[in-house]
Image (cartoon, rainbow, N blue to C red; front, side, top):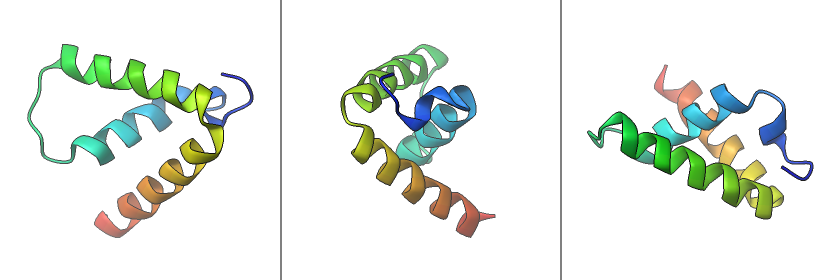
Amino acid sequence: MRGTRVEGDQNSDIQMVVDCILVDYRVDAAFRDRVARALIEWAGEHPAEWGRLLERCRQRQSVAV
């Protein structure tokens, strides 16, 4: 992923961001997987935006707890 944060703790970060994006949207596992794959590809192409999205989702997650 060309130096993005996705490389580190990829699976948990991606799943957390997918949850953040989909919120209460009920979908099947295959759809969630497609969203995750698209997100990984996008993050590799847009590392700065990925970092901002990841931070926003972490903030949202900490507020929701």
